[in-house]
Image 1 (cartoon, rainbow, N blue to C red):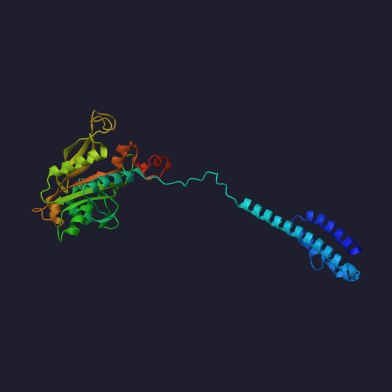
Image 2: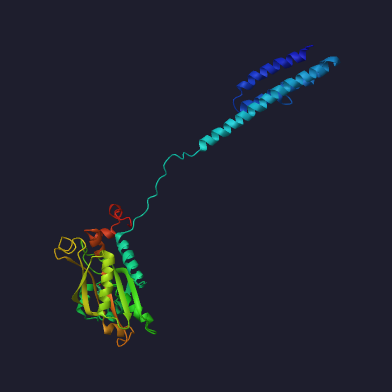
Length: 349
Ligand code: DAH
């Protein structure tokens, strides 16, 4: 039998279904809950009216109202879950990373050709058992000149004017200073020496295409017993072949350096034309690559190596010059200008 309360409950249930369908967000759901399902809500509130129902109808009425309540409560829970799920999904979508977008390549630096040459020359001499010695950019007059047999009044100082920090300290004009340091450091217990020293040198030069007030050299020094000019020639020939190609030959031309006696300029047969004559070798078939010589006995003695016991040879390579020849670079200033268009041509291969 359907009494007033059951009828009202059914009407409320229908109304609740319509309202629930309109509750589209959390706010709507909250107000729906308050209206129908909370303690003060209308569907629940119906149970408070049971006292007006005749005792014999209470059982049936109570279970009818309860079932309306459960039905609407279940629908509410389902809808609530769905809204939460939708919200979570939207959040996830907004946070996704589009992995199909290609990444930005970080720009890597380039190795200055000047360092490429230093690395290559260093590798060659390390493979021959040399050690690499670190020199210093600021030198004393003693190490840069005096110990290398260039006394104060020596005319060759004219060609190596430099930047003085005071009357005695200067920016070294040649990595040859490292020869004197290496021998002196070991002179209390002289041992054979096989070393190279790559580094910067400075001269008061007017900068142009082939001159720079700052440039790099690689110094080499070998001191041992029974070292002769044949060792010098064999070593530099091997170096020239490894650096410029198996077919290269070298020739020695007599020259003068105060710290070597005899002194030579070393030419390599032109790697551009094979020796026939071209613009790289200015038609001669030969390219000058370094200065060298047998260590002057006076230098050995002044640096603490007895020239009656020890002999040796030394050489000095101009780094930029070799790089310019090797890579066809037309202007020495390019090495120091940090122009990416220039540097990006050198990938280290
Ligand atoms: N120091 C010389 C220069 O700067 C280069 C040089 C020549 C170094 C002959 C040497 C050498 O060790 O034996 O012009």
